[in-house]
Image (cartoon, rainbow over all chains, first blue to last red; front, side, top):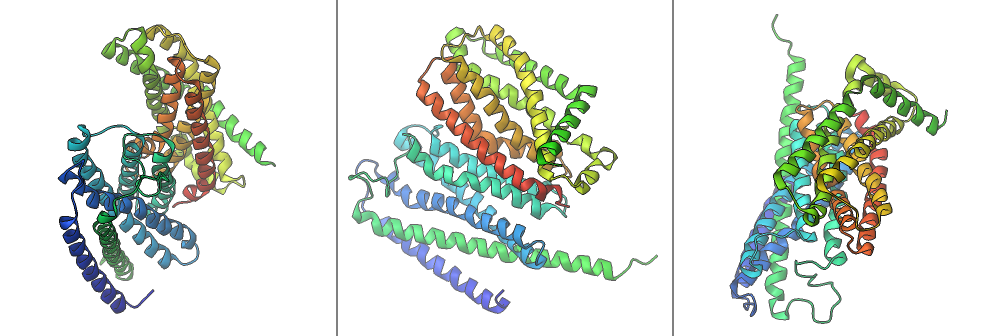
Length: 242
Length: 226
């Protein structure tokens, strides 16, 4: 583990970098050409897609944290608990990203499709993913202290198996959601080149911001764990007056 | 002793315990019957509409019945510190899990067999598609619910709000399987596209295989979680 001061500096730099990237992304999105068919609401793509990409990526961070916890818990307990802090941080940011992604998607869908929601494959599986990670957080809340780490690690393995299903869903079924824009293989697919700067800068910016939030939450969780550990040590070391 | 022997021992234990008390099966039967009756009263569909919705109603009824039974499936392991004895036993932990899951499958299967004629009567059903496919969907779908349900019931054994936690975790994870079983059942009942029904059955089989494997691999971890 890097020394705290180095880590802290890095975190501040990352924060500044994310803010700069977000500002650039916002400016590019505002000056980008407007989609002819959709009008202004088409700009939602710069916000909705990065949020959903984050919501689909951060579960893997959660999975890595959970698997590392399961691996280290009999070898190096302190390291294992640190990885569990990473897992919970990633889970919370996932829920955040998915919530914003689903809500922004709904706001986009009403003017463009005329409906708030439909039960096509991609929307359904995104909602499931959200529910899975909310249930992960609830399991953590309801578990007794000794078991929290192990039980939630197991839940996260189950939840992470769901993530590939979300990605493949638009490949397996013809659905109402727009088909894959970049990798569908159709000759006419893909964003117009003039929209690339706005799109990719926003994608990068929101992913940077997401990773920063995970790091920040990780630091908070580590401090909470260490405070709890210190409290336990204190309680053991100082017997209560009879 | 081989894996199979251990498994059969655990299975016999659960079946014997259930046969003596019969509380789980009675509760499940009555609960599913109530759900079916409530839905009939609420919707009062004609024959064509009832074929469309009965697939969903059937699986919702089975889901609720399963959760009712699963909540108390592991409590008999808590009495008299039996769970600690199970942890110390030399048999592989997954045999305990599989024994209980298969026993639950048999109980829910029994409930389904009793429920099927009642369903046909209340909804004036007759199957327009291939009934053998339906005989394939029922065990696959039930196993999908049971295997995850038994696992999560064990997972939540020492948590607060144990009864609340099981549906909270089980429903999201089971929803892909629920989608598959409801779609397959509805397609078979309404005589829809057979190929599409078979696709859903394949998906359900894939789901069963994946989650059975994961549950077997991870059961030992949660058994020793404390």
